[in-house]
Every structure is written in C-alpha cells, then in structure tokens.
Image 1: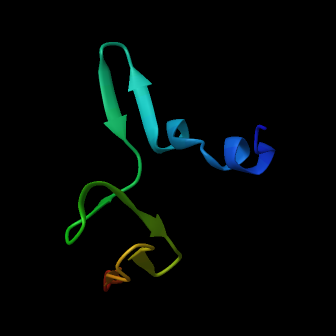
Image 2 (image 1 turned 45 degrees about the horizontal axis):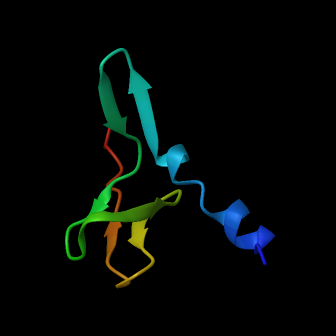
Length: 62
C-alpha cells in the first residue's frame, strides 16, 4: 500500500538548484546536526526542525 501523503511530503528536490554542471543548495545545513539536515528559513531566523537550533538574522543598520 502506497502512502500518498508520504510521497507528497518527500520533495527534497526543492532544496537544490541545478545550474549547468553544478548543484547549489538553496537551504542552509544545520551546524549541529551536520550535512543533510536543512534549516527552515523564517522572516527573522533560521531554525533546525530536528534539534531546535536557531540563528537569528541581524538587521543591517543604515
């Protein structure tokens, strides 16, 4: 039996961008968990869903 929700949720290809012969990561890797664990990009922070590590984005002063 195929779980349609699981197939729909596994869209890891959205985390990468392919240009000519190079592959570029769009999302950041978590510094605690290592490569392969991506961080969510929020308006003011990046957060790891696995370990809860959070980095806040500093606003540039004009």
